[in-house]
Image (tube, rainbow, N blue to C red):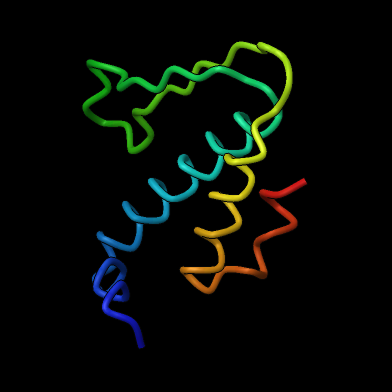
Length: 88
């Protein structure tokens, strides 16, 4: 057990943490494939669980450092089984 497990001890935190983690991994994947990102909150969607907008613009060569950070997050959280979904 890790102290980080407190992030998903309660169901509401699990849901929010899972959503946040997925968005972070998506952003890193896009950066790894050469996209420049803007991440913003959608305003006025009070009843929506998904209120984060990721805007990606293709700029060229991918960033190896983004791929490395993505893999480090998956490893740190013991989520290596999800690697195929996010790292390609």
